[in-house]
Length: 444
Length: 158
Ligand SMILES: Cc1cc2nc3c(=O)[nH]c(=O)nc-3n(C[C@H](O)[C@H](O)[C@H](O)COP(=O)(O)O)c2cc1C
Ligand code: SF4
Ligand code: FES
Image (tube, rainbow over all chains, first blue to last red; front, side, top):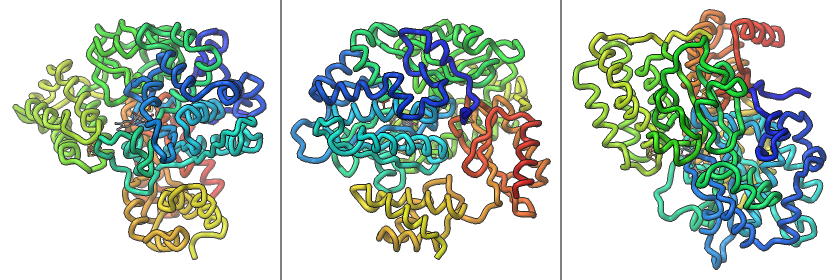
């Protein structure tokens, strides 16, 4: 059996390490089978939790571990679980977010393709912790292969009695539904995701109420990213203290980073939080340096919606706090690298096209604003820029920022504003001369 | 009837699992798309009959999701990712290459109805760029040689 995707991984390193854990077995072609997974210690944590831990203890353990959401916002996972009202008579739901659509991000896919039981075990523990008896995984529609792997794993788990009624004789019942999306980035936003499961258009909801109080079918719902949930069994097995000892003080644990763009060795790499970004890009065990040994021009450190870092800013730890200090965000951990032959206006043109296309259309600043931005930026890119355009773009950005129903609006403008701040010369050159300072002419 | 008995059965199974029948809309659309290759008014009406939700609500949901073609496409729907990570590694030149090779423009279908070429937003394969999705399969880390092989392979299967 071979792997579906040819993506490069540091599984061997994870396997040799006592600290890395998410990628330990993803190079075993049989890991997606329940028996092999169990042989590697799988379902031990679920068994332990169901036989000897109270739900509140599980939440406390995850809180103490310092685990923060890997879907982009970095919100403390245990704290979120604690928001589910204790006295609500309504059913509760756990939803695993496997929409993975932020450009640059391709990590959750590895877990679903190669180690789907790891995700299912994490989902089951989270469900128990919040008192849910029905859990969903929302997989982006294009990931047909992930869907098949997860459904197969789910069927095996049901067959062995690890899902369904009275799991491990504990009296706890849990059902699972695999729901696939329809190719809309906005459905990764948790409230749009819930609307999508309910059969509506995938548009975001106004908060409050927050999903933990009123989510799916107006019932308390916890939405967590695939990677966040996959970390949970390890926290149960090795203890909160162990997990807390990984990474940095405020960003504990390990994290998957998707490295793409102009590096010699793009791939998915598991490292402890706080790992140096420059090492990630240049070290031969990871990115291996810039394609063609060209000069680095910029890095998008956390997916298409995060501000740029220039080469002088990349000697930084990949953790939530350090990246913010440099003016960007860790986001989903998607590091996109581009070298000196890349036109910054061209990069922004690609990004704004994406956000305009993916805006759900619910609120005017985002719907119309991203449209205007795309028009203006396309015009500049095509050599028809006019004096004053940069300030106009900045103004439109300012009118979107913080004024939208969901964070997609902010996501669309942050890279634009950052490009103007860091590469204003290049924007001006483009407008003045009607062409790129450097032409992005990339051949595949 | 357009939907096969097997498709109807899987829609019914899906529907039974959810707390609400409306939740079966997207699964039903997906099952229909997997069988037929595109969506249509007739399909919405059939789904409406199976899950007992007005056809207009099914059409409305379907219109939101760009992944499902709303009109017939070629036997092989080639979807080239044109977002940033793929673009940095030559997605634009990949599209041009396919246009030349298939002798069509983006958005068109070849005369023999074998290939439709479109470009799409990020498909979550950014570290194996550039890439395309053809029907339900991903083809990653593409080179011109590999593209030639894939097209030849698909032609020979057709
Ligand atoms: C536009 C948009 C797209 C998002 N896409 C995803 C996604 O694909 N996967 C994901 O896990 N979270 C995504 N999120 C974040 C989710 O809304 C949510 O915060 C997350 O799933 C919570 O899980 P976590 O706490 O484990 O990170 C997105 C947010 C926004 C605003
Ligand atoms: S910010 Fe954009 S994506 Fe979010 S609700 Fe408003 S229109 Fe929709
Ligand atoms: S940018 Fe092409 S797959 Fe993500």
